[in-house]
Length: 142
Image 1 (cartoon, rainbow, N blue to C red):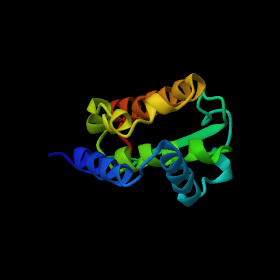
Image 2 (tube, helix red, strand yellow; image 1 turned 135 degrees about the horizontal axis):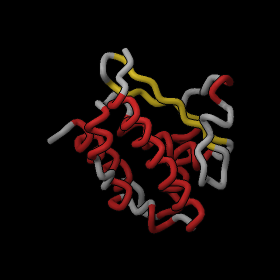
Image 3 (cartoon, rainbow, N blue to C red; image 1 turned 120 degrees about the vertical axis):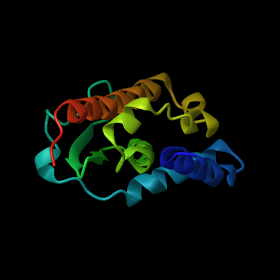
């Protein structure tokens, strides 16, 4: 089992503790509240994710061959979504990020319980994280 699969399984187990979607929704908000701040220099048009209804900024960099992500949003729920993605994808190689399917999103019911605009935003966040990985794989920086 890969490190990504282990983390995805941990997340699924955490969400199984909640009986209904309202509690899961609140948990995602709490995760967003715990996500560290993003430096203001990255809250610009170059780092803003297109396709999200809320403002979401994502910064990626590479250290020792691994991709690290930092993000922020003006929505605590969306910030929670990106916190989950960061938990799974940050600190991984570009090839791991590119290859992962992020199956935990369906297993916890996230895609089924959010509005289409939020689902589009979630897809945009995933796409941007994978694009950063592709870029860093093509042009590694250490």
